[in-house]
Structures are given as C-alpha cells and as structure tokens.
Image (cartoon, rainbow, N blue to C red; front, side, top):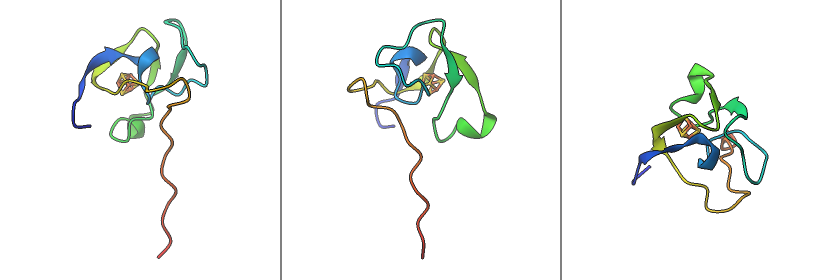
Length: 69
Ligand code: SF4
C-alpha cells in the first residue's frame, strides 16, 4: 500500500469481481485486508483512497493462506 491513491472499485485489485472488466453497476465485497472485516459491499462506481489498480484483468487479491507452525 505504498502509493495509496483514490480510484474506483471497478479498477481495484481488492474488488471481488471475477470479471476481466468490472462495470459501475456491479456490487461485490471489498477484500482489502483492513476493510474486509467490515464486510463492505461496494459498487464498481464506488471508490476510496486505499485503491490499488489492477495490473492485469486477473490481478485480484486473494487472502494469503494461513501459515502452519
Ligand atoms: S473500497 Fe477501496 S480498496 Fe475496496 S475495492 Fe473499492 S477502491 Fe478498492
């Protein structure tokens, strides 16, 4: 989250859409690690200041697997 900046959810890697090009009217959860506990449902036209742009259509955030120690 080094270069956090405002942007729309439809272009953000934390938007839980499986679409290669999410649209404004889609509604999905936000998977940002700090926002996920709030179970936010956001539209593609929503946005916030911890937006991180997708670097490719398949660049969506996945929760890291828990480590076993
Ligand atoms: S609320 Fe913010 S972090 Fe979550 S999908 Fe939208 S822009 Fe990304």
